[in-house]
Image 1 (spheres, rainbow, N blue to C red):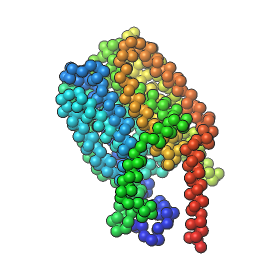
Image 2: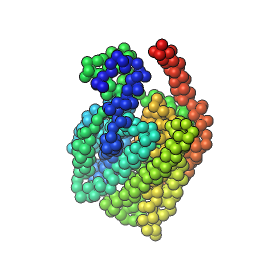
Image 3: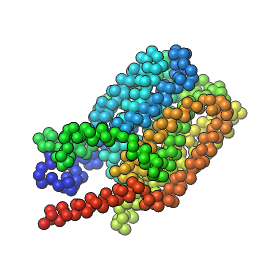
Image 4: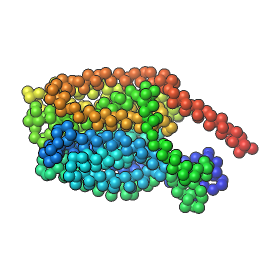
Length: 500
């Protein structure tokens, strides 16, 4: 099938054809699907690796540019802030032009700004280059969600997303570990060159990427066949109207509005934002703590972050193995009861977040009162692994819950609201970490995080119980229900006309 001919003009026929289409990523071989899961995971790791690669060189930056400790954090914080705003542009661009161009062109532009950062002769230049590198990095990072949704069915997607979410989480820890050794033995620009080396390996490994976005594939195929693209023909849109539509979709209005009026999104986004910000607070606070308490040098300080990686790696099987078993049970039950597993309540996906909500306050208080000169350093290091394990469980479960609750229509905006809040908070909080630990001491500064996590602990438990009620009273979900019923009523006369 080369293009859509007149026999396939009806939207329902086109949808049926697409389900069996060989260009549909969901019909690809397992090897191809795994490769296209590797792509966003590897790119996500590259971007998050770059976020903390700068931190070990902070003292060199202070000396070379005569900057204060607070000002020398700006290239680190502004990179994270860039991650918040890059996806605002990238998401609609990928919906209009496809996933592939964002990777093909976004990564080299990202590398250009990293190159500029390495050659910077002032703190201002370094900060600006790092900010735009973060914006480009956030652009290629956010497209991964769409690519995986194109490639995997709804029942397969949770496992793919668990892998995709876990790998980028390891990036900040490994970035700081490797560059602790680099900064101790080389000039500070080498912390940026490590990013470029990793970028080269990553970029050449993803060059075989295929387009996965449905409407981009259909549009290109119809152009090759000499046909007008289906969506433009059906909607009667000019090229100017297409451009206007794309520009108007570059907005943060809906995500911000959903943060304010949807309790599920607002509370989960705030919870995830706090946990995510703590990850970047560790970049500033852990070197300070282990230097002051255990007299660790730069290389030993970097090795502490390996414990975070261990926790993230352990979180993936903690979530995936039970989920696979429950998925098989649900499939067997659906055969006997004729109930589609995809119609089950999304609250069933919250159990990892419930586990993680208990792990986080334990890890904070554990770290707070074990990081003492009389206690072996391995004790607080183990608590960090416990934190990262719980953090990843909460993030994965919350992402899946939001996507399944708000569906394809509002799920992207729910994720955008989540991303916007967590990156902004992660950009701001690390500014105060060193002073907070110096003024309050390790025990009470870390206990403060523990008390905040205790306040957040009931959230996944409450949603497990009251989630159905909240979904019934959601403004956006009620609107989606009305739209779907309206579309159903509109298609029935067409179906009767076609059958007659």
